[in-house]
Length: 145
Image (cartoon, rainbow, N blue to C red; front, side):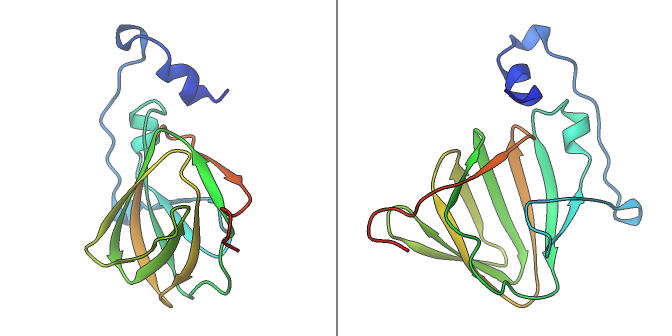
């Protein structure tokens, strides 16, 4: 069980108090992420929220060369807001969605999906609850590859 999951199980009165977090572009802090070919800029929210939430900007300078593969995230929720470019995702219900600049997408934890294409360059804001969001590879839904 992750630290953030343990934290979420405590009553609010027993949780550490959150503190202000300021993520300045001039002091950008990059962290490792799920994919080595993207850059992940941590916005300070993980520390400020004591692990209850994560916010980061993901950017790419080259498009994806192949789909990520089917997976789901171990979290309560994930929010993606596209700042520039686009990303195509397919979901277990058979729908494929292109998220373009200015679009947002809410993905509940446990929902199987596959990132299949991106524009050559893009930037997106991603927020997850809790911060420690696991990624689990899984089999594609029946009839999908």
